[in-house]
Length: 360
Ligand code: SAH
Image (tube, rainbow, N blue to C red; front, side, top):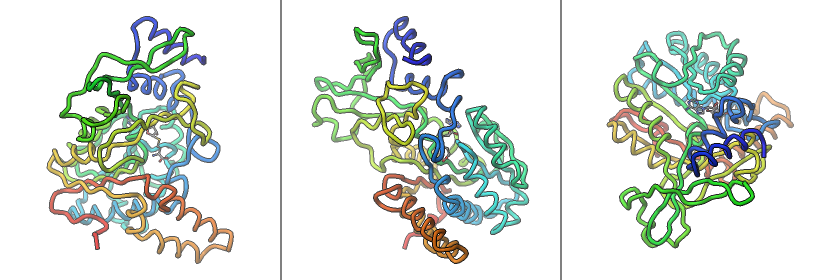
């Protein structure tokens, strides 16, 4: 067992089994050995590739969305353009470049902000966006953003926040906990907390024993913090992640290291731990704050924003190899068997503002 594994095991020996959420929080954010605090997870050499790292087209189309949302809310002069969970900073770099080209008045007046929990990744982001020509401020949480209209984007941020699992046993739903077996190895057991039927989807009643349901209060709390700002000061948000549009049962806890899935307990702090995001739960948070929430798939969104046209234009300036790469990137971002269908999008807009892109 590695050093972080030993630390978690000591905690369990002292205080008893821990929730999936606690295990995930320690693995991802332990100050000494956590995944996001110590590693550079993204890109071909890292553990996984994200949409902005696949192609600049992703950030360009997100920028077009942000500009259209800005126009739809009445082009406020004082506005913050922010990203939450920026990773290497690639998406923000592409957004700044594109907004500067298509809406120079927005680029000139906007306050740019990056919200990042990891001090180490903050340094990486400074390198990436340092030369972008606009001044950018960093924030540990959305709370310190300026009190003014906000345009905000997040890619693969909610899946990185802790979630809890409940297992059905004898008609009850009991929290799944992580303890130690006789050999001192991590294993799944049952904790004390239970989940009431009003928190469960309708299929839960007839589901067999052993079925799993996941909830993620920290994700909903972060969404609430964001949409509270949007409701109070005006603005819009767009969020991408893999997940499902309807609530449902199922175990989606996974560990990924070097582009491969591995055991959840194999390398604590060295693998990315995630679960699928429940978009309906996040959309409900936005609706509860009086905002309009629209959900769709990443494929539908990108195609609706003009992915093919953008690819065509980029292709005109490329050679044959370049054009092949561009088609592969389009397929990767929007193809139904790649990111197009698994990844979903939540768009949050003020009530009365038409969805962007408008539905045909
Ligand atoms: N958006 C990037 C990176 C996704 S990984 C991309 O698409 O490539 C998740 C990112 O969210 C990391 O930068 C991680 O450090 C950050 N993060 C995780 N929890 C966070 C929180 N509560 N607030 C802000 N950033 C967070």
